[in-house]
Length: 362
Image (cartoon, rainbow, N blue to C red; front, side, top):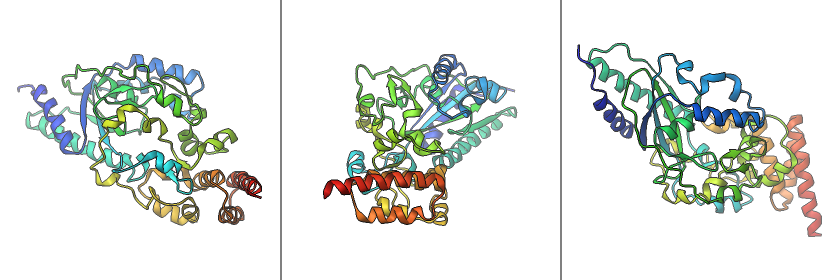
């Protein structure tokens, strides 16, 4: 039996990937030693906050073959998600409107990308079956397991890890998702490694509202608005609340100012189009959602990750940061009557902020 033509297959994988909606596909080996060193330094500095899962799986995150035995190659893909005609800073300045990170406006990317990766896996499997090869194995991932996604993407030539710790592509910016296929087939690796082109630019560091990018290529989650509005399940520190503005789920400032994002293309993926008016709704209208409405409207959405209490907590803070409005005070007081203890702490703070602004108007 002849061996499959792996060069032909690698080219086919990239064509199939683009047909499935991925803007780029790269192939790399499993050597992630330098990226593991970065991770260990990040963890030892305490920058992971309480995200214990980042250290939980030991070397599996940096040794793909330890996570999925037999893995010798990784297929790395990216998919654009930026909405069309979206003015990030205009939306951030619209203090009565809610700001949701652009990646979370549409359908949950985990579902979209996993589905496409499985279809890509099936195409590879069929190709190999046609050659009589039955020992093919693969696993698909997208931010869903102990995988060093950004390190893999960098090695596969999808871009470089920028000073804001995101993957940046010189022709596409950084508004894209990543996904991977771990496999046991010896596909030829891509030899083109992206050159880091951040240069002397410090725009992302300078714009960060809380100073979370504590040095180039180093992000301290304890100061990060995205961490606190999504991962943090408890009380958000007051200094962070004061800088959150109207950001109720995530933060895009460092991407919005990145010069390379002038090359970012709007997504053509229907699943990533905004849902439930999350790109235009007001803070007050979202604050009126009941828990049942939250469950219904967050179905298939990344915003479900914060949970209903986190949702109310975050919006309470944003309402406290908004200009004085008697309607806001009434809404906060009404919500306090039915809120959990966690939410009440943030409601009380928000009421204090609104009352202080009212006194300044007298």
